[in-house]
Length: 140
Image 1 (cartoon, rainbow, N blue to C red):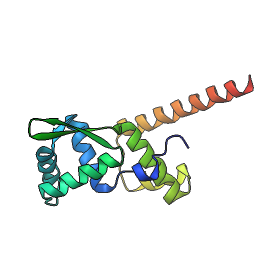
Image 2 (image 1 turned 45 degrees about the horizontal axis):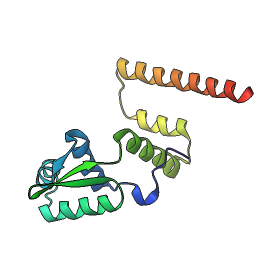
Image 3 (image 1 turned 30 degrees about the horizontal axis):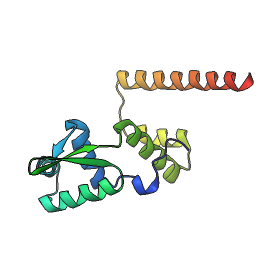
């Protein structure tokens, strides 16, 4: 499956939080990343965040450059690819690839707005169209 993130590069929950900071800022020093992660919940030491970023760099999730005495980190994994890969992995691991079962559980406990329902209908229509295009391409 092309959309899956290779296992060694799949971000952990904490790595995903650091990536969210970087996707928002584009590039940031360790101190800013630590501060923003700490605003989200648990208190992490600067050295903990630095170690996290170093592991993430080894996994190919981020890269850094030196700016004076500071290291500036930037994401290498694109947000859309990360979310698509994580969603695909979750769908396979938890629901054995059954999209309908996943969607039922995902929306069952949430009251959807008209806009959200319209968005879902548009996505289904686009997926239907894409499948028809693929089918026509194979028949030729």
